Image 1 (cartoon, helix red, strand yellow):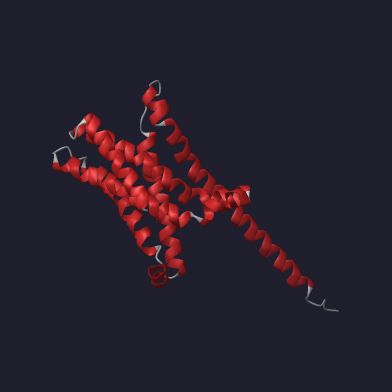
Image 2: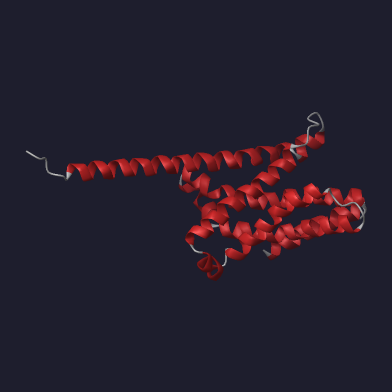
Length: 206
């Protein structure tokens, strides 16, 4: 978490140093820190799905999902700070943007808080599953909206700054959806087998 925060802070500081601390430099800093934090969020979001679909090769990602999630939350703090700075210098985003992405920020730090064992125990397994499912998918959706709205396809900015993240933003939900369908199929198969075994054990009436 510390390394992620320091890296994101250094990235923001470097962008502001090169491009200035005005609106343009701050917006570029927001773009850079968003992409850095997304690279930490993606394994936390899709690691379990990769393991379910493609086997034990991706087990380390699944096991480190919490660590990636906490690193993402730490790395996102400089990004939030840049939003505050942008508002302070009089270039605040529209209210709708604040609300939409603000909900994602709230989910980010709720997930970080309830990833602690004591807090998660108080929330309960069902509550934690619900918070994690809704929160992670909303954050993924917010990133996708941010990345996919750029439409200037013929520029180097798109090919380098958007396309790789577009691919990941689309692939994450697809992988999670496929893993969920696989889980549903396995649960249905197990239920069918158990019902057949139960029926096989019932003596026939003569």
